[in-house]
Amino acid sequence: MTDEVLPTPQNKPERDSGIVRFFQKVNKFFKEPPAQSALKLSGRIHEMEAAANKASIDLLQFKQEIDNKIDPYLYSLVCNAVDPIIKEISHIQKVREHLSSPSQQVKIFHRLVLWIEKAKKWTELLPHLQANEVVQKVIVAHILGEFQALVDRDVKIIEDYLYHALSDLEKESQFDELHREELLSRLQPLLKNFSELKFDSKVITIRSLASWRHTADQSREACFVQSLQLIDSFVDMVTPAAAFEGNKESKHVTEILLKLAILEDQIIKLSMQLESLENSDEKNIKTCLTIIEQLAVDANEMNCDLRLPHEHADRVQQAIEALESMRNDLDSYF
Image (cartoon, rainbow, N blue to C red):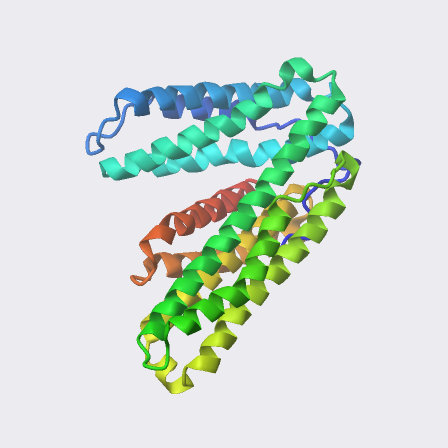
């Protein structure tokens, strides 16, 4: 889980020296004709690509224009939020280059829609830079949105884990509907805790964001672990261990879900660490590259596992893309 999510005011990000190259790369990508073997996009998907092109240009210009126009602390927070969004469009571009079916194109369309929405939330701030309270409100909303998305992800993993556990139990003669109701009843308070974390109504100021996020992540992690432990202990209680061991396939799926959750959290932590790296910090750069390689091995093993649930394949692919992007960024230091 992340220990630090916000940069310190004194570490103000330098103006991005690669903005021009990135701008040219974006333009080149959207202007290049598709490969002969690729399906041609048309209609709404084509329009969305054009909209994403404009939004990416606007976002790069936004980052340039806000430098020295807002409080340095606010600027560092904005960059901490905007930089991953700028990198994300590169990930989407790489995926688009390998499109091979209409269903994949629909997924790209959906990702472009979501990406454009995120980009516009920041570019629309440009006329309001003199109003610090407006900028602060958007920053707080962004951090809260990120946290709420992580809560949703954790709950989804727990639901999947519960589904596989119940599927196993239903195959055993010792299991009945009363057991199901009892397990759901025991799990309900923990799921309620997730909901309370997600919709915490207390006022969060711009200066308290870092400490709030650290505490909230600790609570989220504890709730996540307790939920999985509760399911495991209940299964052990109502089912003989030998019988449960007999269903290796379902156990493997639950292990994948846990590994995927851990992988995603490690990527988040590593991404935050990279934000503070300096070009001269060769030792730490090499350490991060080693970590990336290890995580990439784990991600590719999951991606090649035929037992990976179909509904989670996109998450594994996005993890692979994120690691590849981080590796490319670090390689540019040498």
